[in-house]
Image (tube, rainbow, N blue to C red):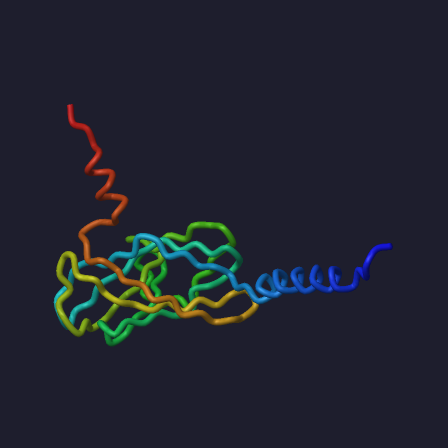
Length: 157
């Protein structure tokens, strides 16, 4: 005759519940790739660029930096109006780049020289309304990291 099966089933259910709970409280993951800013003098403005990817639908709703008096999201082209937010469709790379959406850091508190790292905080709103702050260190450069990589591998004949 076999022993009672309740202890084994209870353990099985407890293990299943332990694995299910973290999945139930998981939030969208937002990936920030290749953040950079242009060098600029104290008191002036600069722009920040990067690639953003969200695993689920989300939106960039705010940005701030202790290095600037104000940080705003700007629309593509010469449109002077700030954008309230930027949609981050699930799985898509959203590029903040010159001539496209970008972050403007106004009235810099100090000079930003080549190689300096400018700390920023991005606020992301997930599809379920949860806000998440992401710390970013943007490197001061003349061009995007990808542009510099392309230039380094260009063959001249």
